[in-house]
Length: 199
Image 1 (cartoon, rainbow, N blue to C red):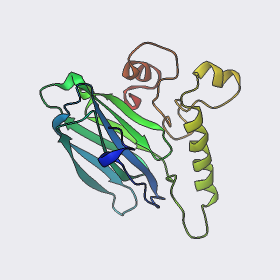
Image 2 (image 1 turned 60 degrees about the vertical axis):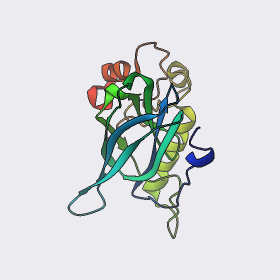
Image 3 (image 1 turned 180 degrees about the horizontal axis):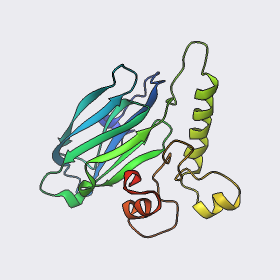
Image 4 (image 1 turned 45 degrees about the horizontal axis):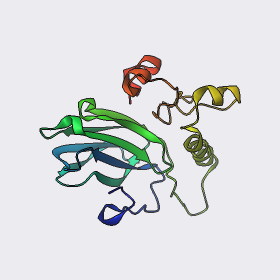
């Protein structure tokens, strides 16, 4: 059951202007779940000094899909750890932001996983509206979400930014493989951007 259906349905709250809302989707190919256990570490850059918020990610024992979140992940780097049950080859995960940008993905052997978020969330509605910096970031993420699955060569040929490329001081907005390569996503991204950006 996908995150938009039945008891796995999620609700996106308003807010999270200092970061972005993220969800973590697990998919188990045998539909018997994954009884493992993990922890999501969110770096709260809104506080002085910065603090780490932790959330338990408890496994699921039935079903094809399980979604956790949404969590407000402040702008910056965060980590997810997860220890699989006895069948790690059956389960994959995807971390997605409120715009639909894929922030991290892989199998059970890819943990711990580091990922980056940029403010604001799609559902940030501050009194007085977004400031100019928030509007630029929001617009960039809206375009990147539309383009992340378009072939890299096509985006470049048409003069558009590639969401998988670093953007100014920020890491790639998406780790989705749009290169047309058949290499595993983690190897493709690591070769192009270094290990800190691996899918």
